[in-house]
Amino acid sequence: MSTENKDNIHHGELVEVEEVVEFTPAYRWQHWIRALTIVVLTFTGFYIAYPFIDPSSNPEPTNFLYANMRAVHLAFGFLMIAAVLIKTYLTLLGKADTYKAEFVSMKDLINPKIWIHQLGYYMFLSKHPPLKGVYNPLQFMAYFAMYILFYLLIITGIVLYVHVYHEGLGGALYGIGRWFEVLMGGLANVREIHHISMWALLIIIVIHIYMAVFNAVFGKNGSMDAIFSGMKWNKKH
Amino acid sequence: MKVSTKETTYDSLYATFEERIEKLKKLPKMKEDTSIEQAIEENGFSRREFMKWAGAMTAMLSLPASFTPLMAEAVKVADRLPIIWLHMAECTGCTESLLRSANPSIDSLIFDYISLEYQETIMTAVGWQAEQNLENAIKKYKGRYILMVEGGIPNGDTEYNLTVGPHGKSGKKISQDASKDAAAIFAIGTCSAFGGVQAAAPNPTNAVALSEVTDRPVINVPGCPPSEKNIVGTLMHYLLYGTLPALDVFNRPKWAYRLRIHDLCERRGRFDAGEFVENFGDEGAKDGYCLYKVGCKGPYTFNNCGKQKFNQGTSWPIQAGFGCIGCSEPNFWDTMGTVNEPLRDRLYHTTLGGLGADATADRIGIALLTVTTVGIAAHAAIAAVKPPKK
Image (cartoon, rainbow over all chains, first blue to last red):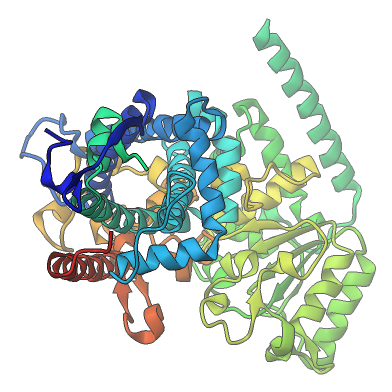
């Protein structure tokens, strides 16, 4: 059906497409794990910042609403850390072409022509520039900012964590955690940086979702499908 | 096996302390006519009460109970240590908290009777005479005296904002001169430890912490004011060990500032349960619920208030139903937000050149998210009419 679709017909002719691997299974898993954790962490995070739910009244001292929320926040926090670390590893050392192409995107990033055409494309003025890598410069900058935010969230999160759990991992990271605490000027600031980073990440994610939909609607190459199936369609030239 | 090693360690520590006390005993008493022992007795404290105090102080410094008699001995020689106390840019609250109690505790009595060679609040000398006293004390007890500094220190272009005495010396110069030959330096209170209130934005006097103007190691004893136990405890620690205590990342003694207010809080169970005071005076407040939502900064603040308490151990803010304001943390005036509101509601004064003045992070976040969404909707609407070029 896809090749018969009228949108793939250019000047009334059939356009040949080839199926290419866009995202490896590991890539897709970590993407959706991160997506899930961000939803859970945002909800529990807002609760931790300001507990907006009253626990059901109970004369026995068996209420643990806040402690449970924190436990969920920590569990999903560590899951997110794992996903981010895996993605970082794959980006730096991954063997699949996808990861190598991420680095190739830097060639597009330093090319001012690509910048102008990419901006022009989103402003409906010019055609989409041909890219050497997988990410266009705007996308690259957004994802790069995202990782800075992820690591800020992870570091500040761990600094807050080591003051709640002094044994095990918390104990092991206590020294380095406190070093960052001094760097950021006290625990109140650490907490504030954590909160602001979350907001910045949320805004980037909203834009990310829109751009994904935009490119799915107008790119018509299965780029949205790729994050589920791994495959997308490239026009043969 | 492990126990015996520990005992041996304590034995040698005990011997070291004994030796140090003997050494201090040989030093001349600063005041011939009276002694700390006498003062404590005259103020109506029984021997039993004194020993109880010594036991509590021993425990506070994490020493075993067998050290209690040694602590009692150590206190008696505390008046052999000359102390110079400087007032910088401050409110004298730290001094007052020790001097002005209606029923002075043993801690404040000790403070009164240790040999304060120079203390502007309580000395009789004024003007040239006062200046001379300070110079003489520094000269006479060179390398022996303990320097305690209260208050932030105006620095840079506005150093002159604190100019003291007939010589017109700046506070910075005075504290630098006094630091040079001190045996130990304690920054008493948040102002001298971290800059404190006058270092808060916009900091018109460029006030900084004592540690910023001297190369010598400074022990920070922050708090607004710090509890008398933390001040006297730091002194007793130095008296016994003759060395600086183990310090945390902000140079605060670990025995006092190792844990957060939150970790030692009697209402911590309410916090974990999710039971919070919504407004002062509500049912939750009467039931002793957690004060997090009415602005308690205990989770971000390191101090031992919950253990040592204030006013002769009567109470402390959270026990009295008022949240911690985070006074022993660096830059607490700027970082902790509004006193009665949680940190979530901290205000950002100069956001977007005054456009978002007095907005919280959440309000700014929602505003930016709204702008983003509007932008997306506009872009999508244009795209629907005029699709991008292929």
